[in-house]
Picture 1 (tube, rainbow, N blue to C red):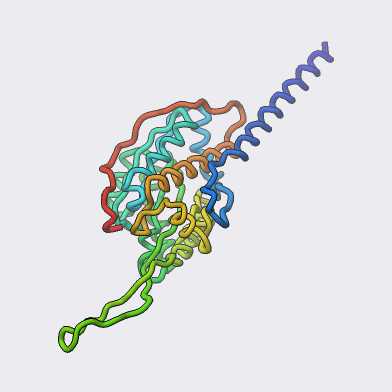
Picture 2: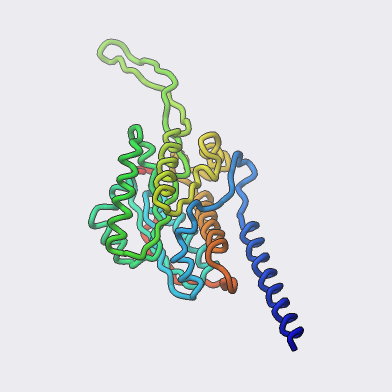
Length: 303
């Protein structure tokens, strides 16, 4: 009888080890590829993903998890957050999703009381925070001020939602206009100087992305550094543009770009879940509720 018990225990252990290995293998291989022209890419993973353990635990227990995605025009345009929503709901059976974005918004806009109220009204378990493009188009970044802004934003939400978790994303990259020369027209009082320009990658994006990552590492907050993952200062901007996924304004993205970004972010969250919370069974493939939809983003003005 004791030998039978020993065999049963050994078989059970082998099953657990086999199941765990397969989960880990699936997590490692789970990755939508970038277009073939992308260069200098990195693994699509969250940093500080273990900070989302409370969210993952609720998912593991089959409880409803509410996700709120806030940000600038990348979120306001609705394609990015809805791609994230679809991806998450494809993995998790109990995710509810809402989002709200403002054209031209900096992170500091959302720590004002009306925005805090809007976020808190959703009773989120997870707030995804996507800012940085507008900060990168501003004057030279003051990293201390930027960190204080992010800290104020998270603290004010945390005061009203004590159990909430946060996930920051970095800006994906954009271009700015740079003067290449000048010429004059007219004579006398009709004389006018005109400037020629070209589009060049906005290198200040690297500073903003680094500031976000540093803040999250210091405060043990999850962060998805898509700027580095998609090529960093050397390649991120040109990768998206050369793949035909960037809008003609060289700041916003086409639907193909936003859809890819949303799917990659959802996959990165699922990888973190696999590495942090799963111990018993895989999640089922289901679809949940639809988000609170904002009006589609139609204009490239007022980024």
